Image (cartoon, rainbow, N blue to C red; front, side, top):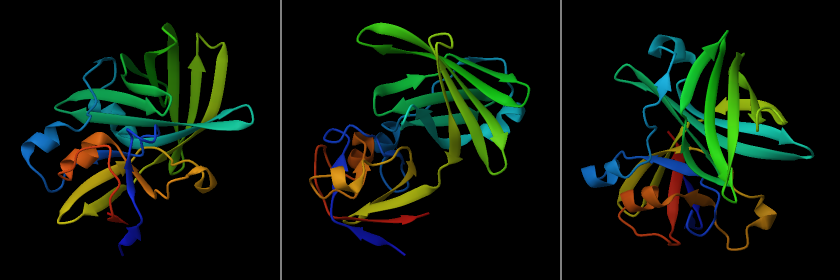
Length: 207
């Protein structure tokens, strides 16, 4: 059942990227705007990567706080690729993907105030989800956590619809000052025929 929302706020207004668009209805140009993982140098086959393919919301413990990171793993045309996204960093293409025992290992570089930071994220199958660990700066900082596979969401504005994947969490409701219920990234908004930043009436439902 669809749930009405009071508004849709793009990531141009709220920094937290909540949904990554995969176009269900829309033209080819809109589809080409969606962010997709880029091919990386890997030492893992698509068959080995199969348990990890999908969109994952990784929740990591950092002291008394939690940090959310979105990880998308694909195995298209025989090539394994991955991207990592968080509200503190731009989308990062993973440069090194490998398998260590039963764990998927993602090595990539981010930056903070112009300083490059090495990251090693490990995902290990654990029942229906994954155990996660992020080592930053060659293990100087370790953040353990979990990863949950994200279900697709159908979002409609007017007569247009897109299917999105949940990629992050909105801020706590008490911290949202403009009444927004859903946060779409700019690609999702453009696929709906709109130009960010916007506020619009929308409906959504789990696909």
